[in-house]
Image 1 (spheres, rainbow, N blue to C red):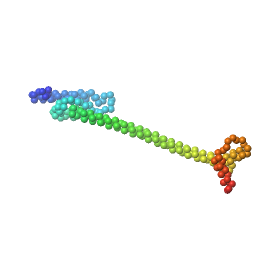
Image 2: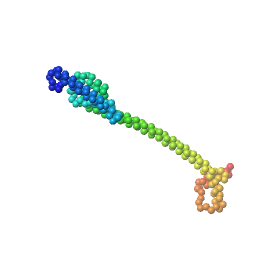
Image 3: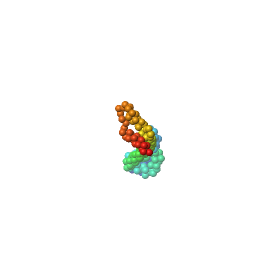
Length: 188
């Protein structure tokens, strides 16, 4: 109507009707609270698209507060020239939000993995100490077999040489160690 009317007074009325229509639409959108729907974690703003660029330009020239008033009601008014940029900005914000959530999850899982690794290392150290203790006990037990006067290996082998019937023989290394110990004692 604004463009087709030639009378300035009627044009002014048509412009005021246009501005009031935009403002009423902002109020209606604001009342609906779309940003709170379904308890979604979302942005606090709703986009109001005005498809005719000159209609938005004329309204914003005539009422310089129309953008700010809408913004205070969590409504962002966009026209075709800024719609794509606005949507890309929103997509980037959502992408960053997703990455931030991923970073927090990575940090949480990394902490749990670190704690698990520390426990694993502690278990390996404990196993190593037990292996060392076992090796030490093994060495002590083996020494009892072939060291000292009257060691067990020499005494058992003496039983065989006295006539004990056996089908098996002791390991030659063990016999040599036990004999070596006896030989050293004889030298002393």
